[in-house]
Image (tube, rainbow, N blue to C red):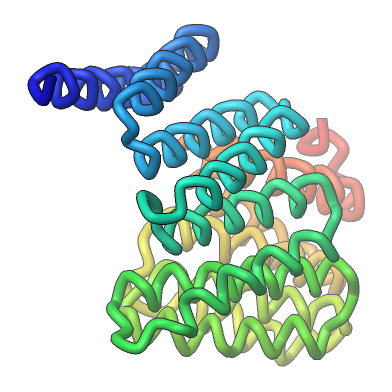
Length: 277
């Protein structure tokens, strides 16, 4: 009956929302259990597009606990269903799956694979005739991620090419935070090339304007790394301490770890063994 079909969809959406709530509470077992219920209900009701997004959400849950192999299996399952139920799904869903795959492969240091899937996503966004601010922002993030993979592979000209396009798209989409993150990555490229004056200029641009505290912490820490490599330990200490303070207040573990590791190196270089401890 139609009523049963509709109720099943609402119930699936409820379990999907519950899975997110449990994930935010770090209750992974309950989050995965709710994801499974949501996926099963969406499938029973033939809500295949929603089902696939629920599978991708489950993949992100696995990624949170570093179960990357299971996360990747989920994404390929979603891609299989996207193709099987093509009339009931969307190209945007496929792009979301490919973007998630690119992120997972980056996390595994499989940068060539990450680039492959990032390019699929960029092709989707570039095919849109009527660009929107949201598409520009999403496309900017994908170009930025692709540039990061090239940076890790030490392919600096390619990295800068993707970062330049990411910056253009971020500004076009009015995304100051993403623009700041991209500028900091451009600074990282120049830092790797030992072009410290150019790197410093990019970091100062990254800190300009209303970019938000997360982007500010990120830029401070990347700038601190540049000054450390430049052997300007006083400046390195200043920016890393500032970045650590913000990232600690915001509870951003990845940035905290980056800042702490670099501050330890700076303190040892300064022979400030008390601070290093």
